Length: 436
Image 1: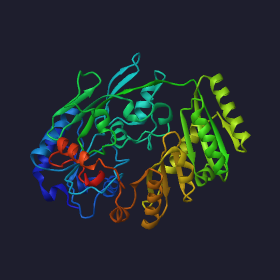
Image 2: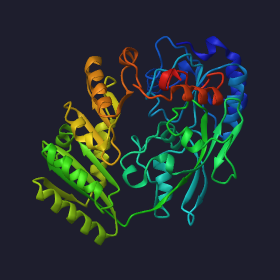
Image 3: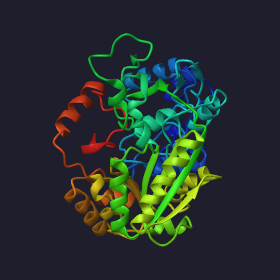
């Protein structure tokens, strides 16, 4: 890959006038860990000049205005925790990181809202909210490094969607930088949307292909008094049965996750498929709901475990086993199927996997898998009315397979939206569905 100094030193000079000396890193000056993260998202032989770190929303807007004028293509990112999700990006000139844009804009404690810059880390914002006994209603894959903007751009909601729904439903306002460097706003403290689009929902899961998120206003929630988790393990048919009964009941869990037998074993929960159910409320409410679920599970032959002390650590372990790997060869897939097919999907292949039972969205992780086997699993998901997309995988595997596996009828509409928001195709080219 070419360094910025050997391709066009004028770009570095002009960009440093905007963001300051030291905030434009030529490729050969970027730390090796960050280089490897970026390389994992690029198509082979893709040249990249460097990495830009705007420190304010205005600087970001000016950077994009400059890249637009110079017909330079950019790859938006935060701390790069999910930069390799999705398709392999082509023809990129610069990566643009929001990690320097990490300020709290406003925390309206009484209104249960918070406004932050897109580069603020999830963990940092949670710590700020905790001081007022408030929390966010989502739990992303990489809580220590993920930025709020990156979480929204990848639609990375987590297990708490059972209670709080998708992250797109928690966004009250958003500011984005358009392809021409202008700032567009929707929701929150402004009166009207831009051009009739619901930008909050449109930019959720857009993978940095429509513009760059710069500020977000989120709904927050009171911190629960107590948290407790019920774990049911046993035969797949019984797990499927108790899951359906639970979801149709009056019980109000904040998280309901089906976990594969491999994952259950690693977590020390036995050798069978399992159901992890989390309750958060007042102590008496959790006690009553947990007991009802335990009785229900034991009645149909399932083993039940109740954890209250240090149960947060169990959920963190669950997340880590799926998402954190020392190997660059691990493959992580996102699946979506009907909730009634969730258990059948988990037992198709012996691997680490979890599915959010209420919505049928989940994640499967393979240390190794052939393209042929992966296609069979995709076909299985599609036969159940769902999908399988490859989030994270070695570059050579992503070259062999169509990453998204999209079989819907909205591709033309998505391309029209891309053309409307990014007519020069300067944001993350080829990262999204259909080469968008």
